[in-house]
Length: 88
Image (cartoon, rainbow, N blue to C red; front, side, top):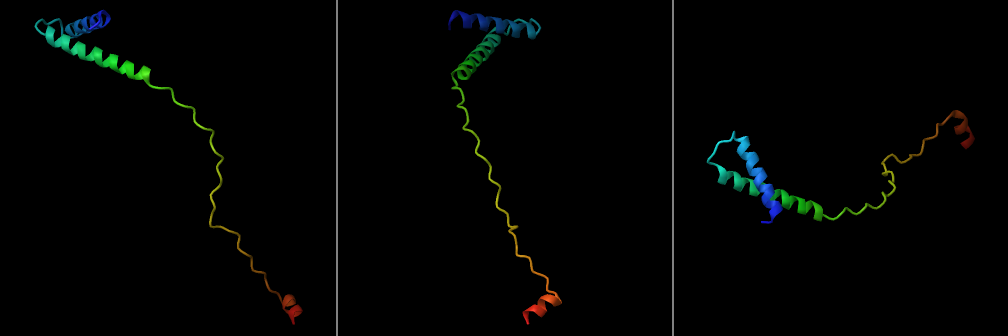
């Protein structure tokens, strides 16, 4: 354990001691918990700093409207007497 890590563990163990109300007899538990917390935090920092930067996304493609089933249907022509007369 390097000196900087040891200082962080000491500080965190002391914080745990104070948080408990300064009750003596738990120094080993405080130290081990502080070590776990400091090393977990250190590992997390390494993961975050070693994560590669995201690659920019490609430009979005133009959206094409979906084909619908409402195709134009031929309109029936109205038949009138005049149109019937012409056919004869």
